[in-house]
Amino acid sequence: DAAVSALAALCSEYYMKEPGEADPAIQEELITQYLAELRNPEEMTRCGFSLALGALPGFLLKGRLQQVLTGLRAVTHTSPEDVSFAESRRDG
Figure 1: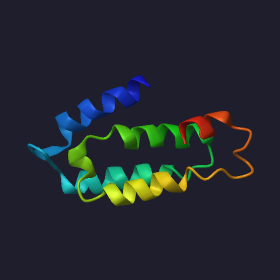
Figure 2: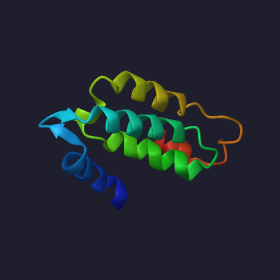
Figure 3: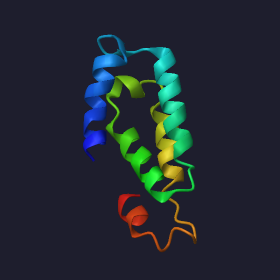
Figure 4: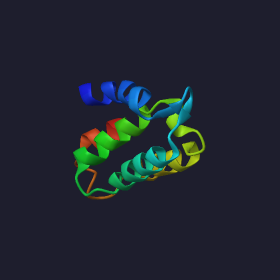
């Protein structure tokens, strides 16, 4: 949780090109990587990246919000393998 809390500050400090504007290359790489990790077979990895996507500052989500929401919505579906993992239901 501490890492997720620090993510917004890190992004604001290092990933902002101009006030309120993300560096496009970093935005593309970060969002793409985080969305890909939502399909990771490890439950805790998926939970961590879901939390990280939710902690991203607004300037990094500009133009990508729908893609992020679609990715997050996709991981809220509980599969038979996830039924025993209570954290995925609580956080999903």
